[in-house]
Amino acid sequence: MSDPMVRWIFLMHLASTLFMGGLIWFVQVVHYPLYSQVGTAEFAKYEQRHNTVTTWVVAPPMFIELGTAVLLLWFRPAGVSTLPCVIGLALVAVNWLSTMFLQVPCHEILTQAFDPAVHQKLVSTNWIRTAAWSLRSILALWMASSTMK
Image (cartoon, rainbow, N blue to C red; front, side):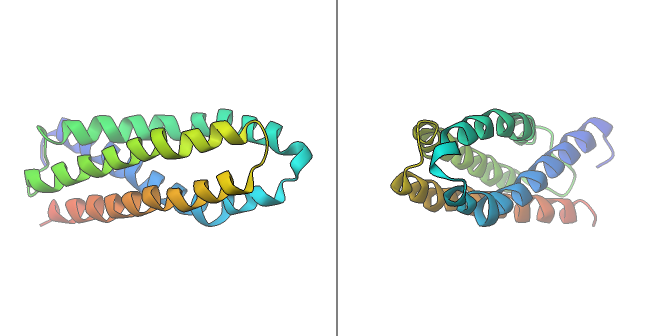
């Protein structure tokens, strides 16, 4: 990985993927389950604020991850073949599609009021993203180890 541009693309990819991999486990195990403890009277306001501040935390690494996953199709580090890059990009697509079509609609409903069924759907469907970011993290670490040979 002698090309500095390729090195930075890959390092940004690795960092954003590992950040999101860790964050999604916190969200899945701690944050989303605690929604039921917020209280009915305060929940809509809490959820509205959650959506605003969470966007500021997750949007930059998600866009960096997406952009670098695409770039890795053309600018791969030495020792990394095309296949893991394609698999990685497919997992990015899983995360984005799950976010847009499963989690965001749940969050939109929850901005009106706490709904136990919607909350349960949010928690259960978020396992898709948890699994995908976990696999992406493992894949990105494997790619990193492949460059160290």
